[in-house]
Amino acid sequence: MFLPDNIDLGHSDEYNLSIRLTPNGFSFYIHSPSDPSIFHFQETSLGSKLTYLDHIKKVIFDLGFFSQVFHKTAVTIVSDQYTLVPDAYFDRKKVDDLYRFNFHNHQGVVLSEKTPAGSWHILFQIQEEMHAFLLRNLWNPVFCHHASPLLQLFGKEQQGVTEKSCFVDFHDSFATIVCFDGDKLLSANTVSNLTPLDTTYFIASMWEKLHLSQTTDRLYLSGKIEGERVTIDTLKKLIRNVEYLELHPKVMLTETQKKSLPTDIQATLCVL
Image 1: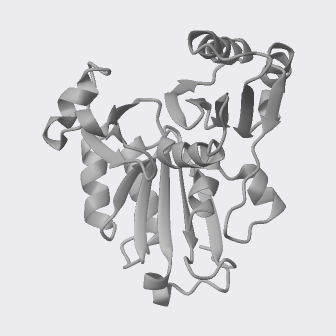
Image 2 (image 1 turned 60 degrees about the horizontal axis):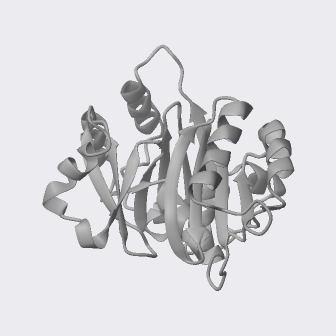
Protein backbone atom coordinates (compact mmCIF):
# COMPACT_ATOMS: atom_id res chain seq x y z
CA MET A 1 0.00 0.00 0.00
CA PHE A 2 1.22 3.47 -0.85
CA LEU A 3 1.77 5.87 2.03
CA PRO A 4 3.46 9.26 1.84
CA ASP A 5 7.16 9.24 2.70
CA ASN A 6 6.54 11.35 5.81
CA ILE A 7 4.36 8.65 7.43
CA ASP A 8 6.44 6.06 9.29
CA LEU A 9 4.22 3.36 10.79
CA GLY A 10 7.16 2.34 12.94
CA HIS A 11 6.03 5.36 14.97
CA SER A 12 2.28 4.77 14.64
CA ASP A 13 1.70 5.98 18.20
CA GLU A 14 2.41 9.51 16.92
CA TYR A 15 -0.52 9.41 14.47
CA ASN A 16 -4.31 9.31 14.62
CA LEU A 17 -6.09 6.62 12.60
CA SER A 18 -9.69 7.25 11.58
CA ILE A 19 -11.87 4.70 9.79
CA ARG A 20 -15.12 5.73 8.09
CA LEU A 21 -17.82 3.15 7.34
CA THR A 22 -20.58 4.02 4.89
CA PRO A 23 -23.36 1.69 3.68
CA ASN A 24 -21.36 1.00 0.49
CA GLY A 25 -17.78 1.90 1.25
CA PHE A 26 -14.77 1.94 3.51
CA SER A 27 -12.20 4.70 3.91
CA PHE A 28 -9.53 5.72 6.37
CA TYR A 29 -7.12 8.53 7.00
CA ILE A 30 -3.95 8.92 9.00
CA HIS A 31 -2.76 12.25 10.32
CA SER A 32 -0.47 13.70 12.93
CA PRO A 33 -2.07 15.82 15.66
CA SER A 34 1.17 17.82 15.92
CA ASP A 35 2.30 18.11 12.28
CA PRO A 36 -0.23 19.51 9.75
CA SER A 37 1.86 18.27 6.80
CA ILE A 38 1.19 14.62 7.69
CA PHE A 39 -2.11 13.47 6.21
CA HIS A 40 -3.17 10.55 4.02
CA PHE A 41 -6.69 9.57 2.94
CA GLN A 42 -7.69 6.40 1.12
CA GLU A 43 -11.07 4.89 0.24
CA THR A 44 -12.27 1.58 -1.13
CA SER A 45 -15.51 0.70 -2.86
CA LEU A 46 -17.11 -2.52 -1.73
CA GLY A 47 -17.79 -5.11 -4.40
CA SER A 48 -20.60 -7.63 -4.58
CA LYS A 49 -18.56 -10.84 -4.27
CA LEU A 50 -18.21 -10.59 -0.47
CA THR A 51 -20.58 -9.59 2.28
CA TYR A 52 -20.11 -6.13 3.75
CA LEU A 53 -18.48 -7.52 6.86
CA ASP A 54 -16.22 -9.92 4.97
CA HIS A 55 -15.06 -7.12 2.70
CA ILE A 56 -14.17 -4.93 5.69
CA LYS A 57 -12.29 -7.85 7.22
CA LYS A 58 -10.38 -8.43 3.98
CA VAL A 59 -9.35 -4.77 3.68
CA ILE A 60 -8.16 -4.60 7.29
CA PHE A 61 -6.27 -7.90 7.11
CA ASP A 62 -4.75 -7.11 3.70
CA LEU A 63 -3.43 -3.71 4.74
CA GLY A 64 -2.19 -5.19 7.98
CA PHE A 65 -1.44 -2.13 10.11
CA PHE A 66 -4.83 -1.32 11.64
CA SER A 67 -4.11 -3.26 14.83
CA GLN A 68 -1.01 -1.20 15.59
CA VAL A 69 -0.91 1.21 18.51
CA PHE A 70 -2.02 4.64 17.31
CA HIS A 71 -2.25 7.83 19.32
CA LYS A 72 -6.01 7.61 18.76
CA THR A 73 -8.16 5.23 16.73
CA ALA A 74 -11.66 6.27 15.73
CA VAL A 75 -14.43 4.57 13.75
CA THR A 76 -17.09 6.81 12.21
CA ILE A 77 -20.43 5.28 11.25
CA VAL A 78 -22.26 7.05 8.41
CA SER A 79 -25.99 6.34 8.55
CA ASP A 80 -29.40 7.95 8.56
CA GLN A 81 -30.60 5.99 11.59
CA TYR A 82 -29.65 7.95 14.69
CA THR A 83 -31.42 9.95 17.33
CA LEU A 84 -30.44 12.83 19.60
CA VAL A 85 -31.19 12.59 23.30
CA PRO A 86 -30.81 15.61 25.63
CA ASP A 87 -28.60 15.03 28.66
CA ALA A 88 -31.58 15.45 30.97
CA TYR A 89 -33.21 12.35 29.46
CA PHE A 90 -30.13 10.26 28.79
CA ASP A 91 -29.59 7.04 30.74
CA ARG A 92 -26.77 4.79 29.59
CA LYS A 93 -28.63 1.74 30.85
CA LYS A 94 -31.59 2.56 28.64
CA VAL A 95 -29.92 3.35 25.31
CA ASP A 96 -31.69 0.42 23.61
CA ASP A 97 -35.08 1.64 24.80
CA LEU A 98 -34.33 5.23 23.82
CA TYR A 99 -33.16 4.18 20.37
CA ARG A 100 -36.09 1.81 19.87
CA PHE A 101 -38.46 4.72 20.52
CA ASN A 102 -37.62 5.98 17.01
CA PHE A 103 -36.40 2.81 15.29
CA HIS A 104 -38.63 -0.11 16.19
CA ASN A 105 -36.97 -2.89 14.19
CA HIS A 106 -33.32 -2.14 14.79
CA GLN A 107 -30.73 -4.89 14.69
CA GLY A 108 -27.25 -4.57 16.10
CA VAL A 109 -25.45 -2.86 18.94
CA VAL A 110 -26.73 0.56 19.99
CA LEU A 111 -23.89 2.96 20.81
CA SER A 112 -23.97 6.42 22.33
CA GLU A 113 -21.71 9.40 21.81
CA LYS A 114 -21.82 12.66 23.72
CA THR A 115 -21.62 15.58 21.30
CA PRO A 116 -18.40 17.60 21.76
CA ALA A 117 -20.37 20.83 22.04
CA GLY A 118 -23.84 21.01 23.52
CA SER A 119 -25.76 18.82 25.93
CA TRP A 120 -26.78 15.95 23.66
CA HIS A 121 -26.03 12.30 23.13
CA ILE A 122 -26.21 10.70 19.68
CA LEU A 123 -27.55 7.15 19.65
CA PHE A 124 -26.73 5.00 16.62
CA GLN A 125 -26.26 1.36 15.79
CA ILE A 126 -23.65 -0.91 14.27
CA GLN A 127 -23.88 -4.55 13.23
CA GLU A 128 -23.02 -6.67 16.25
CA GLU A 129 -20.47 -8.87 14.48
CA MET A 130 -18.84 -5.81 12.89
CA HIS A 131 -18.59 -4.12 16.29
CA ALA A 132 -16.99 -7.20 17.85
CA PHE A 133 -14.53 -7.57 14.96
CA LEU A 134 -13.38 -3.94 15.16
CA LEU A 135 -12.98 -4.15 18.93
CA ARG A 136 -10.75 -7.20 18.48
CA ASN A 137 -8.63 -5.83 15.65
CA LEU A 138 -8.23 -2.12 16.41
CA TRP A 139 -6.30 -0.52 19.25
CA ASN A 140 -8.85 0.82 21.76
CA PRO A 141 -11.19 2.30 19.12
CA VAL A 142 -13.66 5.11 19.80
CA PHE A 143 -16.94 4.81 17.88
CA CYS A 144 -18.50 7.99 16.50
CA HIS A 145 -21.38 9.02 14.26
CA HIS A 146 -20.90 11.26 11.23
CA ALA A 147 -23.46 13.74 12.56
CA SER A 148 -21.38 14.56 15.63
CA PRO A 149 -18.60 16.63 13.97
CA LEU A 150 -21.20 18.24 11.72
CA LEU A 151 -23.22 19.39 14.74
CA GLN A 152 -20.07 20.79 16.28
CA LEU A 153 -19.06 22.57 13.07
CA PHE A 154 -22.50 24.00 12.36
CA GLY A 155 -22.99 25.00 16.01
CA LYS A 156 -19.74 26.95 15.93
CA GLU A 157 -20.93 28.76 12.81
CA GLN A 158 -24.02 29.84 14.75
CA GLN A 159 -22.16 31.43 17.64
CA GLY A 160 -23.26 35.04 17.92
CA VAL A 161 -25.95 34.59 15.24
CA THR A 162 -29.50 35.57 16.17
CA GLU A 163 -31.48 34.47 13.12
CA LYS A 164 -32.40 30.93 12.19
CA SER A 165 -30.14 28.91 9.89
CA CYS A 166 -30.34 25.64 8.01
CA PHE A 167 -27.20 23.66 7.15
CA VAL A 168 -27.31 21.01 4.44
CA ASP A 169 -24.38 18.68 3.81
CA PHE A 170 -24.44 16.38 0.77
CA HIS A 171 -22.51 13.15 1.23
CA ASP A 172 -22.58 9.42 0.45
CA SER A 173 -26.00 9.57 -1.28
CA PHE A 174 -27.36 11.29 1.83
CA ALA A 175 -28.22 14.82 2.83
CA THR A 176 -27.69 15.75 6.48
CA ILE A 177 -29.89 18.71 7.43
CA VAL A 178 -29.37 20.61 10.67
CA CYS A 179 -31.38 23.67 11.74
CA PHE A 180 -30.70 26.23 14.46
CA ASP A 181 -32.50 29.17 16.01
CA GLY A 182 -29.53 31.30 17.02
CA ASP A 183 -27.36 28.85 18.96
CA LYS A 184 -30.30 26.59 19.84
CA LEU A 185 -30.46 23.31 17.95
CA LEU A 186 -33.89 22.79 16.38
CA SER A 187 -33.46 19.56 14.42
CA ALA A 188 -30.93 17.19 12.90
CA ASN A 189 -31.84 14.64 10.24
CA THR A 190 -30.09 12.60 7.57
CA VAL A 191 -32.16 11.52 4.59
CA SER A 192 -31.45 9.42 1.55
CA ASN A 193 -30.50 11.82 -1.21
CA LEU A 194 -32.22 9.96 -4.04
CA THR A 195 -33.59 12.60 -6.42
CA PRO A 196 -33.41 16.41 -6.63
CA LEU A 197 -37.17 16.58 -6.16
CA ASP A 198 -37.12 14.48 -2.97
CA THR A 199 -34.23 16.45 -1.48
CA THR A 200 -35.76 19.82 -2.34
CA TYR A 201 -39.12 18.77 -0.93
CA PHE A 202 -37.60 17.61 2.38
CA ILE A 203 -35.57 20.79 2.86
CA ALA A 204 -38.54 23.00 1.99
CA SER A 205 -40.71 21.02 4.40
CA MET A 206 -38.18 21.59 7.20
CA TRP A 207 -38.24 25.32 6.55
CA GLU A 208 -42.03 25.33 6.73
CA LYS A 209 -42.28 23.19 9.89
CA LEU A 210 -39.62 25.18 11.74
CA HIS A 211 -40.94 28.55 10.52
CA LEU A 212 -37.72 29.65 8.84
CA SER A 213 -38.05 32.80 6.75
CA GLN A 214 -37.35 32.54 3.03
CA THR A 215 -36.19 36.16 2.98
CA THR A 216 -34.18 36.69 6.20
CA ASP A 217 -32.90 33.30 7.42
CA ARG A 218 -29.93 31.54 5.86
CA LEU A 219 -29.25 28.26 4.09
CA TYR A 220 -25.65 26.97 4.20
CA LEU A 221 -24.52 24.24 1.80
CA SER A 222 -21.52 21.94 2.04
CA GLY A 223 -20.23 18.59 0.84
CA LYS A 224 -20.49 17.16 -2.66
CA ILE A 225 -22.43 20.04 -4.16
CA GLU A 226 -21.24 19.53 -7.75
CA GLY A 227 -23.75 16.74 -8.25
CA GLU A 228 -26.58 18.69 -6.65
CA ARG A 229 -26.89 21.62 -9.07
CA VAL A 230 -30.54 20.96 -9.89
CA THR A 231 -31.45 20.90 -6.20
CA ILE A 232 -29.35 23.97 -5.41
CA ASP A 233 -30.76 25.99 -8.31
CA THR A 234 -34.28 25.21 -7.11
CA LEU A 235 -33.45 26.14 -3.52
CA LYS A 236 -31.99 29.46 -4.66
CA LYS A 237 -35.36 30.27 -6.23
CA LEU A 238 -37.11 29.56 -2.91
CA ILE A 239 -34.61 31.01 -0.42
CA ARG A 240 -32.92 34.40 -0.74
CA ASN A 241 -29.82 33.82 1.41
CA VAL A 242 -27.97 30.73 0.18
CA GLU A 243 -24.27 30.44 1.02
CA TYR A 244 -21.52 27.85 0.72
CA LEU A 245 -19.83 26.88 3.96
CA GLU A 246 -16.11 27.56 4.12
CA LEU A 247 -13.97 25.04 6.00
CA HIS A 248 -10.48 25.56 7.39
CA PRO A 249 -8.96 22.19 8.39
CA LYS A 250 -5.79 22.34 10.44
CA VAL A 251 -3.92 20.01 8.09
CA MET A 252 -2.38 20.63 4.69
CA LEU A 253 -4.85 19.46 2.02
CA THR A 254 -4.65 19.64 -1.74
CA GLU A 255 -7.39 21.46 -3.63
CA THR A 256 -8.70 18.08 -4.80
CA GLN A 257 -8.89 16.84 -1.20
CA LYS A 258 -10.71 20.00 -0.09
CA LYS A 259 -13.36 19.34 -2.73
CA SER A 260 -13.65 15.58 -2.26
CA LEU A 261 -13.16 14.87 1.45
CA PRO A 262 -16.47 14.41 3.30
CA THR A 263 -17.44 17.40 5.41
CA ASP A 264 -17.51 15.37 8.63
CA ILE A 265 -13.83 14.49 8.11
CA GLN A 266 -12.91 18.09 7.40
CA ALA A 267 -14.96 19.22 10.40
CA THR A 268 -12.97 16.83 12.62
CA LEU A 269 -9.73 18.18 11.16
CA CYS A 270 -10.87 21.74 11.93
CA VAL A 271 -10.80 21.13 15.69
CA LEU A 272 -7.51 19.27 16.16
